[in-house]
Amino acid sequence: MKADETIYVADTTIGCDGGGGALGHPMVYLEISTDGSITCPYCSRHFVLEEGAGQASGH
Image: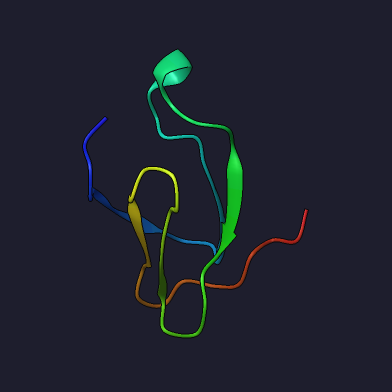
């Protein structure tokens, strides 16, 4: 798992499991705030909302 990785996403609600399979972390759902980004508290992956991206689908 690469620390401090930046991932660009299209929705304001994202799920992060560390991306390492069994070596990852528990799935957490994060809500991107109005500043357009959020960092996972477990693995420090940085999620950035893509320019022009819409709101979460609300499943």
